[in-house]
Length: 313
Image 1 (spheres, rainbow, N blue to C red):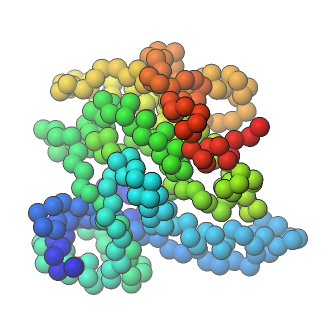
Image 2 (image 1 turned 180 degrees about the horizontal axis):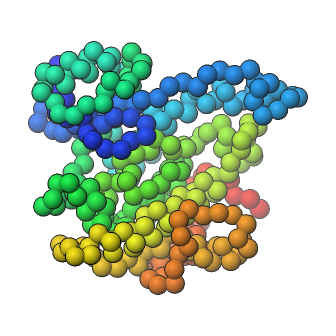
């Protein structure tokens, strides 16, 4: 199977968890994300958090929360639920040696570098569809322009985020650079139910710590969408298009994922939020959603079983 693949280019993109290779098989393009991570050193349970009783749960679980395994769980959940349209299409995972990767790159005359940073002999990766960025006349600014042009996709991106929550997936580190041309391509920090720290299927709290509730992570995704995608676009688009043609890109954004100002007022400012507070301008909510937290527009009978099981009376 490996002989059918061409490794075309090592992408020069910022990725905290891996290296992206542009690849081709049978005239179709793919993105292979190779994960660069190291396992944490095992600690004596008595050295973690407490004296008595010894804290035993975290180390064992953390070995299974690598970015590679997070993506496997999230994309596997989407396939299981028949909802693969909510993110980039994934075709499976690979396990390659550094030698195999370098041989394929050399054979194809591939551009780029960075694979020498890998410290493990075996490298795991996930094979995804290739997603093209929005075209732009200046290649050096194409990624930035893609993020500016993405505003037309914001309503669908927000609907898809609610559907991810419906199916038991929270993104957690949500930012605009996790999307390409409106398609979610990165789930490396996602938490997917069932999860050892999350609520049980029966709705009770996890016996392990640090515990989290499903609603808390889902709400944080919405806050991040508002702060790091919508509000960030409002600021950066003014900067980017100062002196440049807009090429059809919208001038304003009326989408609202989370009313940060209202939530701060109701919570008396007891928690911090990422980015700046939502301004009064362009406060129109998304159709089908309501403040302060956008909710799925489906009826209560159709709510996710996970949302039901984690609801507090």
